[in-house]
Length: 89
Image (cartoon, rainbow, N blue to C red):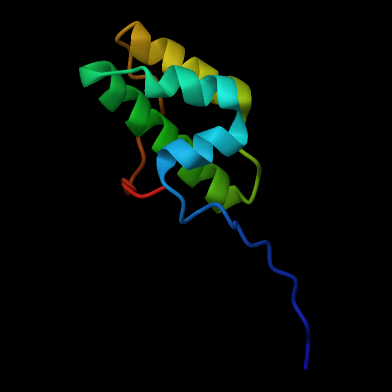
């Protein structure tokens, strides 16, 4: 039998706040302070980023998470539209 190596993302089943905490505690703290529409914009952007990272088997980028939160605070939705929208990170 041929053995294949698999990369398993152990954090995939964790809530979004927990995943952010493991990526960067500073951004997790910033994210936890968001409310209302700003929180919704940031959540959608971060979920899309994490889903893309999972698909490509790469680690999430701290600066990308920081930029998503900054853009949400400024009321901007800045992320690529996906053909299939994934709601679970």
